[in-house]
Length: 270
Ligand SMILES: [Fe+2]
Ligand SMILES: [Fe+2]
Image 1 (cartoon, rainbow, N blue to C red):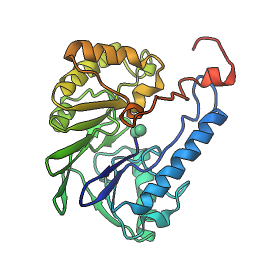
Image 2: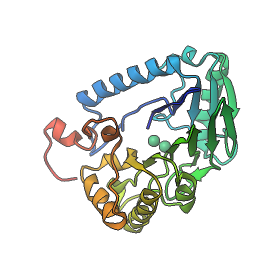
Image 3: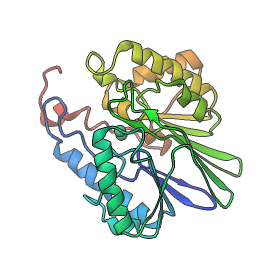
C-alpha cells in the first residue's frame, strides 16, 4: 500500500514500508518474494529521501518500518503525520507505535498525531479521517484514511479497511479523482472473514466506484488469485470497472504470495 502522492507543493509518502506474509499455505516466503521485497524496500527508501511529508496510517510492518530495513535517518527533519499511538489502538500496535515514534524522534523527525486533522502545505490540503476499524473487528486496531487535494485534483487512500465494510469509508473517499482502497481478504472466507462481509464489501465498492473517477482496489484482495471475480461483481453492480494498483501504473499484477505453492512446485489444494 506504500503510495507516493506528488502535488505542486509537496511529495507526500503514505505508509512507506513493505512486508511479506511469514506463512502462507504452510510455506515461508519464496525466493522470488524475497527478491521482490528487497526491490520494493529499495524503491521505498529512495523515494523516502525526497519526501517532504510522511504519513503512517497504522502500526503494521507493511505500513511502517522502525529502522529494520530502512535507516531511520531517512526521516530526519521530515514532518511525519501518524495515527494516534495511544487512543483507538490495540495492544500490539501500541507497543509498535511507541518503538517507532522513539526511533523517529531520535532521527530528528517532527511527529504530529493526525487523527481527524487537516494539514495544509501551500495550496495542498491533507485531510485525515477519524480512526476506522482494521476490518470486521477492532481486535486488529484502527487505521486512518486520508484525502490529498490540490488545484481541483484529489487522491483518496483508505488504508487497511479490508472491504470496505464501514459506510464511513465510502462517505469519506467519495469525490476523490483517484481512490486507492484495501479490498476484502477473500482468502480468509470461512476463517476470519465471512461471505456476508464480502457481499457488504462488494456493495460498498460499487457505491464508491460511482462517485470517484478511478477506483483502485488492492492489498488484501490481491492475496487471492481469484480477485478478478470480485472486480466483475463490482462492475456488474456499478457499471464501472475497478483496477489494481499495478494497472494504475500500467503494469500487470504479480500475485507472488497467492502463487506461493506453485512457486515451490507444491500442487495440492489449500
Ligand atoms: Fe494492517
Ligand atoms: Fe496492510
